[in-house]
Image 1 (spheres, rainbow, N blue to C red):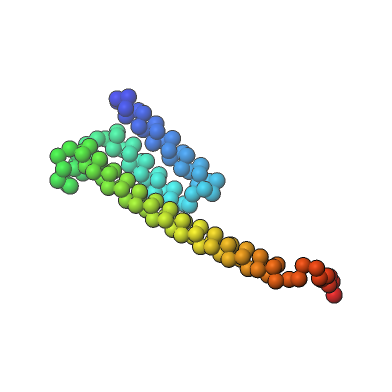
Image 2: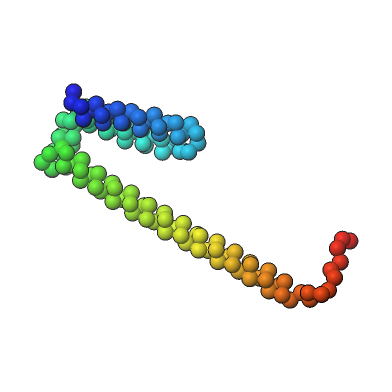
Length: 126
């Protein structure tokens, strides 16, 4: 076994443990934890048995297994970036609506305060 295999498998195990610890703390849903565990397990298996990636590359019509993995990784990262961009854009729009609502409420309160006579006594209580 090569050092890179040991390092990648150790990291995959670490990532799996961290995933399930986050799930137990409630920072991650069960479905997300299962998906991430499957991903990290797949990483470990591909590192320990690189012939799997070569077989997969043959199915895809790519020359080498590492090329197939890189193509899929680039595709997955591009999609993840796209999803993050859309999520950030949605949060920006929600924040804009919230700030707008707060500004309108603040302006309405200021207008009401300006309309009240400043020297008059208000009745307190029943």
